Amino acid sequence: MEKYIKRSLAPIIEKHLGKGMVIIVYGARQVGKTTLVKMLLEKYGASGGYLNCDLPEVRRILETQNHLLIKDYLGANKMVVLDEAQQVREIGKVLKIMHDTYPELQIVATGSSSFDLANKLSEPLTGRSLIFALYPFSIAELENNFSRFDLSAKLGDFLVYGQYPAIALAPAADRALLLRNLAGNYLYKDVLMFENLRRSDLLTDLLKLLALQIGAEVSMHELAVRLKCNVKTAERYLELLEKSFVVFRLRPLARNLRNEIGKKVKVFFYDLGVRNAIIDRFADLSLRDDLGALWENFCVMERMKANQRNETNSGAYFWRNHAGQEVDYLEDQNGRIAAYEFKWGQGKFRAPKEFLGEYGVKKIEMVNRDNFFNFLI
Image (cartoon, rainbow, N blue to C red; front, side):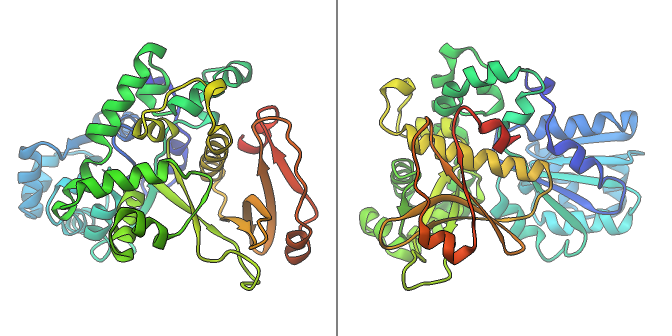
């Protein structure tokens, strides 16, 4: 069913096709990259070619770096997709050869791990590529197939089971099993293979710690102490999880470092279903003690998707001072600060005067389950 959900990233990418740039699409495994690029290929009809780089025969041809052999393999295609391109050795050089030798060929490459593909692409493709990220389904994408009434009714499902394509549209009885399989077998595959990580147990422990602390400030020192490793190791493992699209960091906005939190960060999950699978917690919202944290994670992630869809470039932060006053989410657009507080229900919130005065913000907007469409769509 996922192929019938129109992805917001598709028209953004389409605007750049045929303009001489290699298109790179990152995203976690099973997030829908293959479906997206195949939809793009359909517009090219018979002149589009799809190469699955998980297949040894595809890698063998590309890794020769022989432009004549590669061209013969590609045939008369005007557009070619290299899916899971990180599997190809020296993929940056391969793409550079293809791009420079056949400038009329539109190349699209996908990768499920940005750290691996980025390391191989950074130098060879300087000035030759555009990079995009594909996320799990957004509320706006699902609105093309469901009414707002239906989506509001499904909010509980989204907070518990997330929005991965194969899971968001699966029968309710299958979702927990599918998520456990995704979290256990697929999502961290690239992380574990990266430089043959020796401490898979540390990675698992780190994920559980982060899953239990969404919406709370996290310090690398505290994580290292709890993991019984040094700060450098904890930082490295967290960075790998970020680059594999499992988690992302929200940093504090701080101008007056005497009073404001400046070093701690918040860590959120790209998908709440994955987060809940890590700690095996699929209870109904009425039975949960983490509803506020789930709602905050949901809103921050959905806002990221909305800003991508609207091609809005703004810095994203949170704010807290040492007195415990805080603001959940801030966006900085050229020095203009917009502030938001996330409450599942109609809770009250008193805006910190210190924050309003320091940043010249007149109002902090409350985002709850009754008005979230205005914020996310």
